[in-house]
Length: 260
Image 1: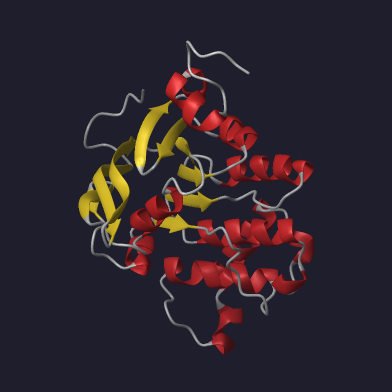
Image 2: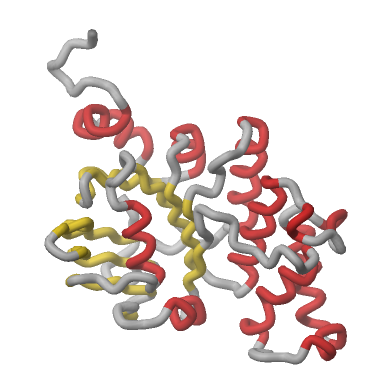
């Protein structure tokens, strides 16, 4: 377990619950993530993983419970307010500006964090710090050779890399990635894991993934969510050996049961 003391957590979920009508989707999830930890969230389809991300990032408001970012409650805040507090999220579906170039996409991502807010396009070329930061991000995600290419013309893997660049552009310390390697080949996935490790170094990372090789290769800790409840939260080795996890998700019979 983390050595962080209570109150020093980067992100906390406290008895978080979410119902849609009479159906309870998230059933009292509590989680504490220390600064710099990488947490993978796994669970079967319909377990509530994306709902959990929506609650953390402000797209949904919890029925009860609390979400704390560096000790400050996020409940009732808009997604853009949460982003400005230092939490950024990517989505399952690539979320970029298709008709802008790679460089322009990244520059849009850094403007607010540098204090420019709403700036007329004709002045953007003069924003030296924004242009420099966009160039740095472009190099970081390995797309410097695609600087002037429209985002719509990138490969799928390149588009996902660009979205990662946009996600970290604002300097957020807590990053949420929703199935970042979905739809990628095995070789693309391996390269993308390396990219994620590189660009999120020193940051707090939560990622939802179905690919177990990604989760166990990337995460410091793994949270297992089943039917809206967290049944395990520990190191990859401990979670892998947990009989409840084996039975509920990894497809291995629990201890005492025979394989057939």
